[in-house]
Length: 329
Ligand SMILES: NC(=O)c1ccc[n+]([C@@H]2O[C@H](COP(=O)([O-])OP(=O)(O)OC[C@H]3O[C@@H](n4cnc5c(N)ncnc54)[C@H](OP(=O)(O)O)[C@@H]3O)[C@@H](O)[C@H]2O)c1
Image 1 (spheres, rainbow, N blue to C red):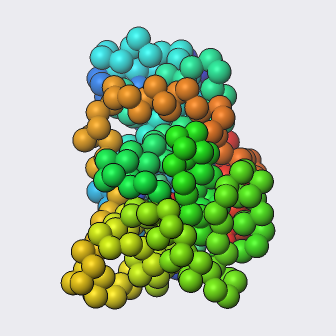
Image 2: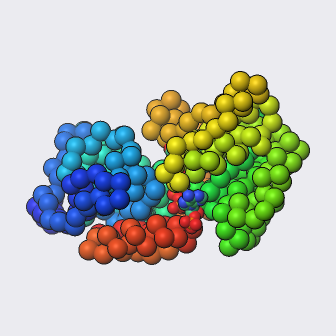
Image 3: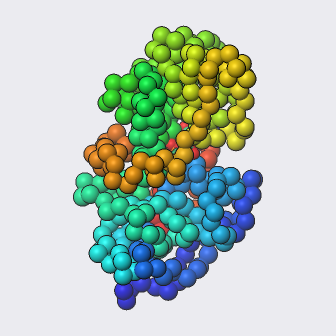
């Protein structure tokens, strides 16, 4: 306890804004854990699209401002309330609560952190929760729907690559849509069979042909905007697009004939709703911990200290396919 400082650096959001969020690196008090909480010395925390959406005011968290940003990370439990004292000294991955992950220390409920198995590095452990569980959850959703194959957009994202690898393991055909040739090459190197580059002419016709041939009645869309409608148009009768991101920052544009005449649907997927419905001790956990060093791992593009976080957020957004930026306080 004695080596825990009373003040620390954190990336604190003061005001949401679509173009210029007021995010500052500043000194704040180290949080004091409540009886059911642990205090974690943060070792690493990724910059995810959800963090960017949060700073823009597009993510429904209910967090009170000002607050440290950052939704997930990993580190070591250095103190705890009386109901979580058994976790002191453990390396954990965590979902950040009110205090945020882009900080030297954070306090979270014990239910929001998972001890990391020895084979999982702290860096991969910092990216263990949001994308890997979403990849598992999306594929489970398509399976429950009875889809024989699926389509995914923004397929070269960290999450898209996890889905490619999981689908290969499960033997489910995937049609992957990317927006640049370099991303198509990256996915082919992973062994993806069907990759369509939306910058190339004729890709929509090819999408329709493949969707019919493979019976791809589920699609995972992280782009939104016109892409949602383009994908839905190409899918067979009775299909569903699950929108789980909005990288284009545009509202979904969908031809209503899809709903009226073809029994197609647009649905949503949000981990924060899927997780409570599927339990914290469910089979997905076995899958998660079994595959975290391999199929569910993420490439790290850069590591930055808190002091250098703000320019790193801009660099990350310029070319997200390069890999995750890890904040290492
Ligand atoms: N609903 C949920 O519960 C949930 C959970 C986890 C993640 N997500 C969503 O999953 C998506 C992927 O997350 P991630 O962490 O894997 O992302 P990431 O690794 O940072 O990659 C983002 C990818 O999207 C591409 N991209 C960016 N803007 C685009 C656009 N307008 N049109 C097409 N492609 C675009 C990027 O390509 P460039 O290199 O060309 O920029 C990059 O390949 C995000 O939308 C995130 O919000 C949702």
